[in-house]
Amino acid sequence: MLYEGQKTCGIEIGKCQFRLTRRLRELEPNGVVIRDVNPASTPSVEYSLADLGAELVPRTRQS
Image (cartoon, rainbow, N blue to C red; front, side, top):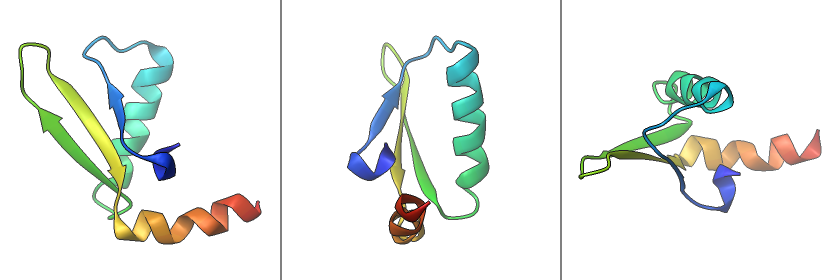
């Protein structure tokens, strides 16, 4: 889970990773997650919770 720290996705994306990436990109403009692209010999993307996302964690754990 993102509330446990940053998660890294490699360049090769399967169906599940594609859906996750699409959803995370939808959450970025809403201020829920922060997306950090690391250009390197093997590019990667790191996602972490923004302040708003961290505020939502207790609410999601209640469900």
